[in-house]
Length: 234
Image (cartoon, rainbow, N blue to C red; front, side, top):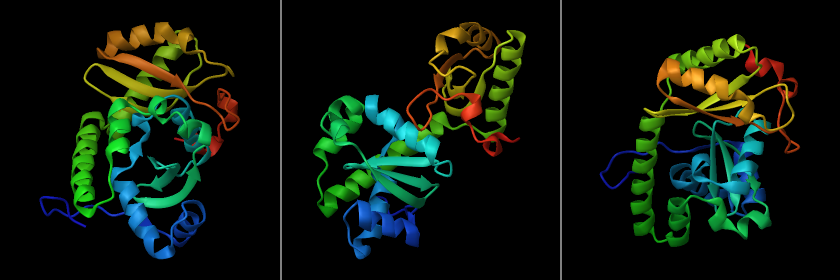
């Protein structure tokens, strides 16, 4: 498939298991499963564009599906990809779908509201969404080296203050901020207990540190003991 400038898109890869899940949960035929996977992969709503209960729902799925690193929302489903390989799909609770405007960023909600299924319109939207996400990725891209550097800085600061915080993921970096997911020994939201770490981080890097305590499969705040040990080796 090509965009409006004739450049090739990276397509979704649909495994036999992924195709089976789309047929079962998305209600498409086997012939149309690949087309749906490509559409979701190219223009689906990304995690950062979700809000409220939908954001929490996707976060829980991310924690459960440790192999997924690319999660998209489309229609009433959440689609899990490993890079561009579709793994599976989940239905979004109706209570969330009933209040969709409160669970999406204004831009994402407007896109969903106005989207049409005509081929011409879809080609235009493919191009627009692809360019948008490429810009966002370029802006927020974190290299493995930088990722390790930020985690090491937070780790060293936490030792100085004798506090336990384990960064599980650097989610976003801008010229002024860095966003990370973390867990600790506390089974509750303890973000306000790490203000001294955030202050020291700002002094060392010139960036504000935004932290978000991840949740476990039951919806509670995860502790370090909840995490699979093999996931955090190295």
